[in-house]
Image: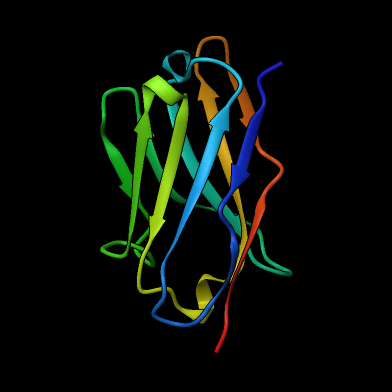
Length: 117
């Protein structure tokens, strides 16, 4: 069973930065897509940023230009650099890994990000 472990969340003031880390228990080469989702209180889980095997990236409009997703194959790790954070970025952030054939989806336990003065 693949395990994804997130870290790096916390409390930060508006305008600040955080870097989230997602460490996988096995090689991330096997995944067709890895990404970060977030879920604010009372809301659904939304895709924030993702990166496919072919390096094509996706960012939601709300974070474009502020967040950057990256990966380190040697460390089996995916990162989410978050800059210029806003209160509306407050949410639990989840790491996700997808394998398309067969279709398999893996999730981390989530890490809390709170942006508040």
